[in-house]
Amino acid sequence: MLEFDRLSPTIEELVMLHFPSGAVSEINQRLMEKFAALGVNAIVDRANNAIALIKGRNPQKSIGITAHKKYEIGALE
Image 1 (cartoon, helix red, strand yellow):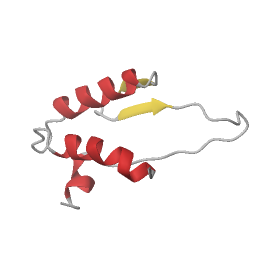
Image 2 (cartoon, helix red, strand yellow):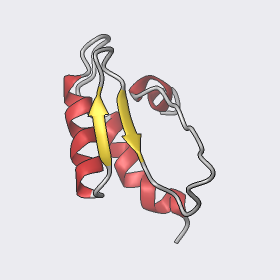
Image 3 (tube, one colour):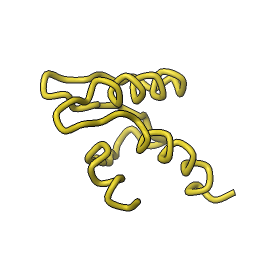
């Protein structure tokens, strides 16, 4: 199964959350639940950014990934 196929239901679930502009508590809560279920250490900072640290195979290298929460995903609908 392709990774996209595995992630598609999660993306659909997050897009359907109640998410008016500036009200991010519902999506933040769901993201924290998802990270916790995966055993990923995550926080929500004072600016309502969800930040997760996912350890990779090589401790000498790192990759940063950023994304808007629903705004960018919702544009694909």
